[in-house]
Length: 293
Image (cartoon, rainbow, N blue to C red; front, side, top):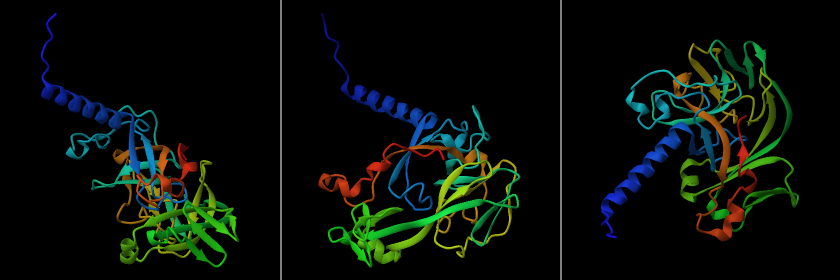
């Protein structure tokens, strides 16, 4: 039986084309991966978390697809339900090709304001309970081998010890290059307070406050316009969100989907190839952690 000669170039083209097409369809309609580059959602999401976003959560808009910036249409289709206060959502920054992840705080018609560090929704203060210590550590990589020590605290790899015992409070640790630390002057160990916040619909989640007197702790009242949403980061004093002109109100069309779970998390301790450092690099306890709220 004769064997038909195969066109190797055509096979390679088909493999790349159909593989790319499947990837685009998967990312557009089902799940899209994102990584967390900033600490605005601490303690819920840490720098170095890699998440999957459910693209079908609120239906699809032109921003759900790679060609979304072409402005082919407005509105959403196949929307099973609307976004709810408390949802953690990835959205396209208004008028820019940048994605943000924040928590939904206000829906159309809601009145939002901050007063002395406390959140008010529709003129009612949002309950904030159970204050507890929280540490945000941003360390230069030059300290990896020796660790960080101050007073009764020590930090090595992924762990914090107090008086030579594992810390009993929550924290996040991130390692940065010495050059970045020298340029930004932001590396250090910061003491904050973690609270449990209860939103008007009963959703409970954690927030972190450095103080109740930071620049965004006192704001004018915001009234969420029709077809828009109001978002805030859980790291209330270090989040560019709807309280700022940089983000402001987010159009319903700009929503990409809600965060489903963390599939991988690391603290930038060392390159992935350095497998002998994995226990100091990987946040094993965050792998597979669901983050719908």
